[in-house]
Image 1 (cartoon, rainbow, N blue to C red):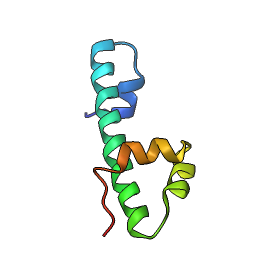
Image 2 (spheres, rainbow, N blue to C red):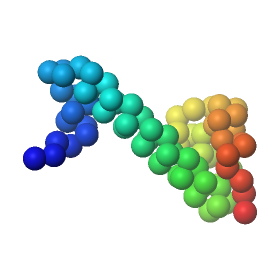
Image 3 (cartoon, rainbow, N blue to C red):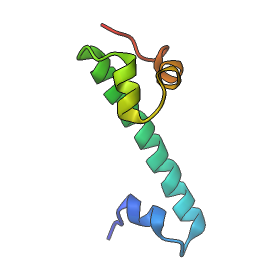
Image 4 (cartoon, one colour):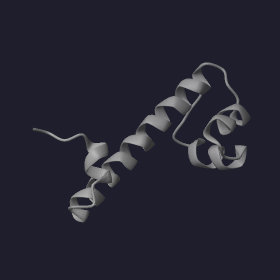
Length: 72
């Protein structure tokens, strides 16, 4: 039976497997965040609103996403 990646990441029985699961979750979270930032920009939200939703400063979110994200 296939285990949920969250359970594998939390299980300390096999640390190397757990670390690989953590990396996979981090990559997924980064991809999802980028998609949501793009969707927010497309919906007309400004950088300060997006930053607030992410719990970071406007400068931090703009620095991270101003190149890969474009407004349409």
